[in-house]
Image (cartoon, rainbow, N blue to C red):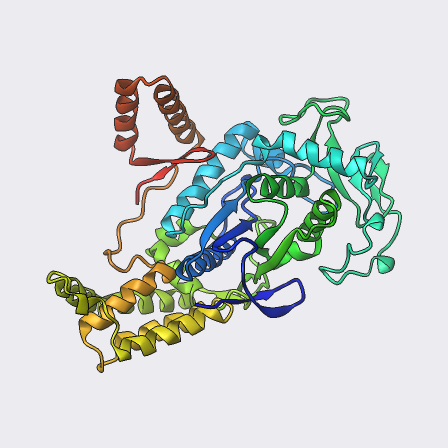
Length: 482
């Protein structure tokens, strides 16, 4: 199966081949865990999951990295305002570490509910401070960094290609923009390292060669992607709102630190979920919809996944309750239509003859249509329409249709072989989250000490709480059972 993807770098459809045969390095900008993810955020992750599944369906192994931003993301893209984690802690009267743990686990719960494939790595910004400092030191040694009274900044004037990715005209921007406690040389310059205030201690701060402080938001993605994938990524994903600032800054700092090597070969950007009276769902207003709100209204998380599948990732998707209800009804009808087909396929497999596993000419035709849809910029709405048409095709047996649809669900991710389960419980509060964190940490310590009876005891306690723990290369991740 051949894949062509719309590459923001060049603004055109390009045939995709990875840098290393058979293996795709894919980095996706993850959440800033200062609040719940809203359904607009989640649409991006669903679309990236469709891409990941399509790559694997095409035969690639995907090294998939999704970062957790738990420090450094300021409330303003111009490097002003509070760190979002500090803002979240002040809002709720908790520590920043409690905020990070609570909203990370809430995000991972949403991830599980939406049947998103687990990434290869879940790096947290606070676990990669040393790598971020190393990146800034490299840029400083190459002459791209200058110091102000509030931090270290990247000098965009020294990277002539800075505006190319987003189509920016730097000469048109107002010069001499003021920043708190200092002046930028250029309005597009961005913080690599921020100094802590001299008159108070921040909740999150680290020693560095330049003094106590914390990294700028953009530094983490370059540092972590390099550590976990390499200097050049095959695919970098994110929302369209990241093009102008965050992704432009990632390109500048990465390529300047790495002798001009391309930072990412393909850039895949997802368009917004909008409401009928707004172009973008946002947390800034303080009013936004979470997946839990949808579940409380009687929808299943997979109803929302199906809703996301109805629009191409580069197109706006308009949310309204009637639109979601229509998607829910279509999703449930689709599953009802599939049940006898899947039953027929499962029944035909009991004999397990070679002929059962061979595609008929009719099946091959449908398979070609499905692969063509995926190959043209991961056109999931078209692929879903093909699946719906196949389910009604009387020219194939029920077993033949069931086999294809079950196979295609590896991309659609609707878990069609299962009845819709009840959603797992919501995280109640930070105390519950902290209690589970402590149990998971104790389980890890017992396993490292080879105290298997204690590890088994803790496993049973976690099972009683309906918690499942997944051991990943970066440590254990827990979520409520589905």
